Image (cartoon, rainbow, N blue to C red; front, side, top):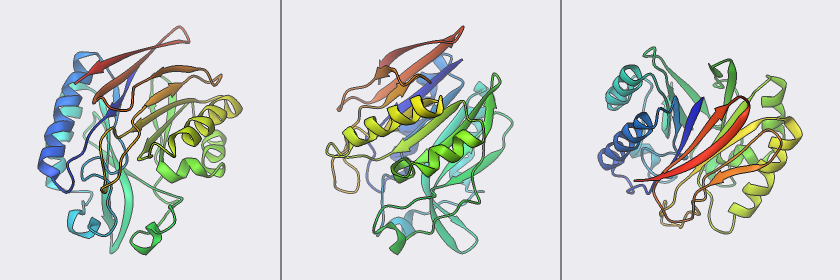
Length: 245
């Protein structure tokens, strides 16, 4: 099994440019035989609150068409984030785009302070997928601040917990501490994807990383590069490599 965390520098509000960046990184992941690629929180738009309504995606959004095509043609699962409208409500969410041409939505369950002025939270959109008999579940940013979230993932027998985040340089040490603890406590492998450039006018910390189910840090990116953290499992032994864009 080979999985990829994409570390990106979003262009604020420029969905077209961000999509092109996604395409390039997906192609890079495919070249490295990845079966899944996970992008950071709201990766298609960059993190937004006040402007999110103008950037909103819907499940049947035509802007997802090429991502769906790449997933089908290359047998890869693509996890891409955006503000997502479901019925009349707006969520911080991500699209789980699978090789069978299906699209599922995960919605952030635990919001940061201030996000609830713009977004709803929901536990109703919480898909799991399976790759090579490994159950995979998802988290977005502040979800990982609440121990209940990984605990619930553990109850669902999650093997791999994928967190798409936007954490600042000040916040990243806490993210590392918590994700390592969750990996060890719940015996889950943990893959985390973060931006390496500014989003919402604020710096992001990069340092996308992977911990095995013993809580051992297997690989991490630095705070400034764009590219992929690739992790591979052979006979229950995880290894990592970094491919810069």
